[in-house]
Image (cartoon, rainbow, N blue to C red):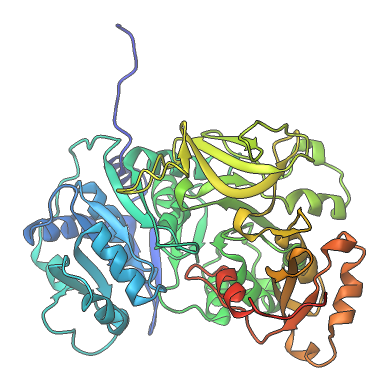
Length: 538
């Protein structure tokens, strides 16, 4: 039909061309051993074009998987641009996984080339000895000393290459990137992102009703670049023209806070454990953080006490985001509505401590165990289903019908949704405690425990009980100055007005630290295994 709009494919090269033309002077800053290095978008994207030529010269072709085993730095961003823009697939490897899990992932993805930081070479060697598909390894020189034998030097490859053209329109439904889940309940699963899904997700990050990324922003991306495409921030920064700051392998709280101050960061993003660790240093630097406007916190539930502490001590509210690898990852964000104007701080905290509302592009359903739709009344509790423009339709080489059905993703998260669309997650299905036939939310007990001023971390798991089937066991990490004076009875007294009486943990165990997954979440699988035979009162 005449008069219809043009059909320009939504692709990574489209973002690259826009960034080169409109934001060439904006900068990418990386923390190094010697200080920082700074490059303009024009320089970074020109290097990305050289990387594409270099990869082609060593035989990388369309749909070939190029893996990265890197920290957050400029060269990793160059790979983010080059690999999908040449029609190949970027596969970001989780540098914190065990070598046997990484080997499984690399073989499953059939990665042909891997880009590795020199400082991560000892960890990669353990993986390389287990795989047969990788035929070429490129080493990024992020440390002094000679590179490993039988590898290619990243800088030498770029120096010999001419810039590649990214002018061809790649089909928007072509695969751009591959990321594997953390595998907390089994083997990791691959999620394949398309060019279209990445562009639409990045556009949403830039929307004013979303994270509102814009040209005047300076973004510190503390979320690892191997974690769900760094929550879309690399592409969104190129799209919006926001300056990008990356910490490299330097993650001490004082260094990260120094980056916030030195570069006058306006927007930062990371998981709750990062912000918990940075609270003291950021509190000390409060008077120097005047440009910091927004902090995105996701990956796991944000404790109310942490949210309140940042508002009180740092002067910035944490924006809670929710999603998963399968949703690219943003599925909801917690912002107040105009209707919340004038709410007292405790009531507003209650609103913002939810997982927020889904943006345009993500549709949500709430269903019971039989799949029946439940109302958004703030009381009904069921599993969240998702579908949308950046939600996976299946796993890579695995349709997984138990997770994907009738066009909807079963998230495994149990929640209620209020009439305004605010999602309040109660728990993961696998983490619920079923006591006497009734469900207990481990998340609600955890967040209540972590609101205690002397508790740093808390995780609740189900333990077998002879009478009730299962009962909750709480594992807590107290503050250093509270060790020895906190007791089980003190914490149970603190919990009594906050949760139902029959939800109170049967026991509370004090630990020096909680085990974590590769993306920083509490590893409840490890806790369940460790305390599966823990005796409880009958």
